[in-house]
Length: 63
View 1 (tube, rainbow, N blue to C red):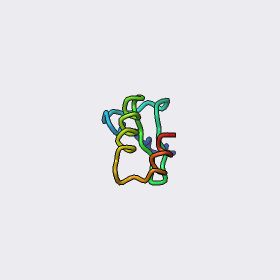
View 2 (cartoon, rainbow, N blue to C red; view 1 turned 90 degrees about the horizontal axis):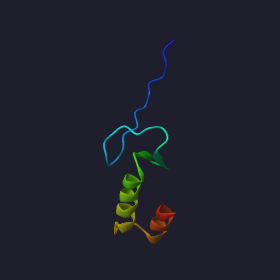
View 3 (cartoon, rainbow, N blue to C red; view 1 turned 45 degrees about the vertical axis):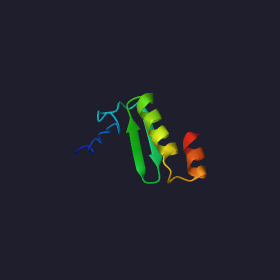
View 4 (cartoon, one colour; view 1 turned 90 degrees about the vertical axis):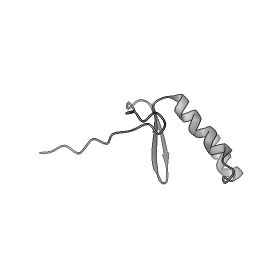
């Protein structure tokens, strides 16, 4: 019997494998993984400063 393939979780900023206990951001389109709070913070700052985002999207992302 074969085991299911292990999904490697790669950090969106550090391009390194993310340990299971670190940050996961789940959205409707999929999941994003971060090795540490720095990567998550960079994503959040980029998201809320994007001029194409609505104020509602920015508020939800900050929460």
